[in-house]
Amino acid sequence: MNSVNTGIQLVVWIIAYPFIAFTVGVFMGGYGRKFTARLQRRVGPSWVQPFFDVIKLMRKRTNISHGYMHDVAMMMLVGGTIMTLYFIPVPGFTYFAQYGDFLVIAYLILVPSLGMALGVGETANPNGSIGIARALQMLAGYEVPFVLTFIGMAMLNGTTSMLDLVRIQQSGGMATWGIVTNPLLGIAAVMALQGMMNEKPFEVIVAPHEIATGPMTEMGGKYLGMMFIQHLINLFVETTIYINLFLGGAQNWVELIVKQFILFTLILSVNGVFGRFRTDDAVRFMWKVPLPLAALGVVGIMLGIG
Amino acid sequence: MEKRLTQRSAWDKVLTNLQKRSLWMLHYCTGCGAVELPPTMTARFDMERFGIMPMVTPRQADILLITGYLSVKTLKRVVLIYEQMQAPKYVVGFGSCTINGGMYWNSYATMKSLDQYLPVEMYLAGCMPRPEAIISGFTGLIERIDRGEANTWEDYYKNYEFYRKNQEHLFGSIETNVDVVGDRQYYKFTEVQQ
Image (cartoon, rainbow over the protein chains, first blue to last red):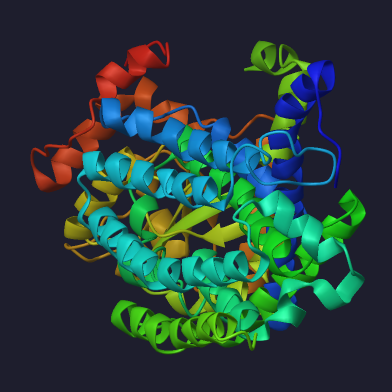
């Protein structure tokens, strides 16, 4: 992953990268629904069902806006996610990643959540507000262990740049992968990732049977379509962050996509057999299990054991 | 209608073909018949094969499935829900009670024919329709959408006075938050003269 793009190549990547991420996200989303359906002994929908959903939502004739912030929030959602996407190094496109390290990603990844909070606030739907409150609560749950695992990796390798982390991990094959050099952090991060990807048992934000899909309650048509697009790109973003931190990044796109699907399968398997935690239980779990694990990993690294 | 169908562009046909694979259903089950839906959704008949999923809010739903009889009071709620849904939207009447009142024909408290109050895209006849009938009905709806014929929702805007008159005949005046007459202009529909 040593290529640094310039000129026309860079422009092509900037334009194509969100579309590539969306396409991979569509297949991941479809795979997720198919996988869950097979777990429940159903046939399940098409492999590209999220694509049909997005087309359907974008072709709705009515689009009800609840005001200025509602419109802008959708741009914050998709824009913030695409912005995060640019700073994540993938094979062939590392231009922004050499300027922005993990701290930039950790900052930008909050923009979609904030956008959602502002937009849903304007719709004034009580279910939406509950959803947002839960989203921000969960954020406090999973973000702390996740950032702590990253701090551990940065201390271990002496760099905060994700690009350098990937280079160090790729220097010695599988033996230098983050999950091998420090399994405690890797396990803590995969638990945090489960919450970050909003899969069961931490699926408290959407919770259709409880709060009527939470933030999405008042969304319809193109608004919901934008949220779907954001969700699909986010699948790509979140799995790629984990792969770059702990699974040695990827040297080509095939490797990246294979790793993404393997990681996603793990998360879906947990999703498939669990019910939903209550919000306080979910946050409590996040602070009881992944957080001490990550803290233990960091202490290990500080003492030179890790 | 004939002219409209031939004027559909190739691009429109392609998009409709993708669109019909995703239908989200809001089920309003205060009458009977809700018991037929879980087997339709779960492993035995698996509605998600066709991209049909239950959805929980009117804003997101495409299909409004009304199972069984509607009492006068619940019809009022259904009208509110229907007007909140985003077009194109399809009302599916489920069971014979929505068609002609069924066994509640003599009741003073239920409405008799759903299509007097809302534009019904399709009826699923039976008491009760089995999951096979529901699946076959929805497949028919998907085919109608593919052919561009599932336009009954436009009727509510074009014939709004007719529907509103029937609704108000049942439960008196009703205030909804949706400006249907304004929406008619937005969609550029012309009012049908009675």
